[in-house]
Amino acid sequence: MRLPLSRAECEQWDLTDPLAAYRKEFRLRPGLVYLDGNSLGALTNRAVEHVRAMVEDQWGNDLIGSWNRHGWFDLPNRLGAAIAPLIGASADEVLVADSTSINLFKLASAAAMARGKRRRIVTESGNFPTDLYVLQGLAQLTGGAVEVVEVPREKVLKAIDESTFLVVLTHVHYRTAELFDLEGVTTRAHAVGARVLWDLSHSAGALPIALTQSRVDYAVGCTYKYLNGGPGSPAFLYVRQDLQQSLRPALSGWMGHAAPFEFTDDYRPGEGMARHRCGTPSLVAFAALEGALKALGKLDLTVVREKSIALMEMFIRGVEALPADYGVSLASPREASRRGSHVALTHPRAYELVQALIGHDVVGDFRAPDVARFGFTPLYLRYVDVWTALERLREVFSGGLHCQLPPRRSAVT
Ligand SMILES: *Cc1c(COP(=O)(O)O)cnc(C)c1O
Image (tube, rainbow, N blue to C red; front, side):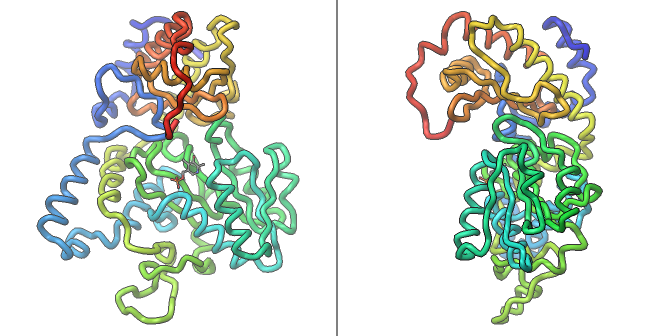
């Protein structure tokens, strides 16, 4: 792959970048190289406008009448429909509600109620902790009737058998960015009659996904990472159309009732995805997400993916050119087709390395015990930013700046 070889050439590439226009949608402090959009996406102007309108005009002026006048009640479906094309789903297959952790529980528990005689959920050991913890809690809730089988990645396919009712996997691994073959695993699970629930937290908005076409059963994911919905923004969940009517929620809140404003005593599940609403959503947070999704417009994820790969390739080549005695190694797959949109490096003092870089306006993050992660968000990152990041990385190492920091860690790393 040909890549820019000087700062001037980076600037040239940035001028002809088909995604260049997106950067002005975002509020980024000048001088900052933000390589953490995989953890918390940047703020958009649109999100600011939408939150202001929600608070001042809607809540402020129209108060409770806003539920009808400003379409508050339908927001979970409207935002789901806006996310749908980004994950290859149809508008009526996606709902925005709650958090990713809660949506995982909602779908896994609903699948458990429909499991028949099958007892097992198969997942990957080292999966994102919330995915494991939520499944472990579900197994306990069933008094052990449901069993969670956690196996390393290379054993996942083998572990899926006739006793499996659900396979729960994360498409892009949060630590290494390694990709699962979403379609291949889904097909294998279906071959033995199991269903698949994909966690798309590090995928949505970063690379093309075709949920419906890949016959994926269920999916969940974050909106505050590559979708830039804001800190703690509501998550999405997806259920394939033909499975929706037979999937009854266990977390059956009043908002998911077929007729919530009839206030009857007995639960009747709402149509399609509506049943997965639980309680009253956090509307200010919904407003921020609505703005962020408007800023994405009709995003072409193949173009996003191409640029993400080029940015990562440039970064990895720069890291590979560092002297071996700096002790950095690549923890992500070297091959771009097996990697999501972040690059993980291991280093014995990864925490101090990340802190030293943050001190020089290059923001990545640290994942225990020894991983430094750098996310590449093509909508607001320029080639010249990667150039700067590599310059600062060399400065930190050559000056030993990461060795001068106290090893005290903050609560969030
Ligand atoms: C970020 C992330 C989550 C976050 O879940 P929350 O409920 O929003 O805290 C879940 N799963 C994966 C794989 C993630 O990367």
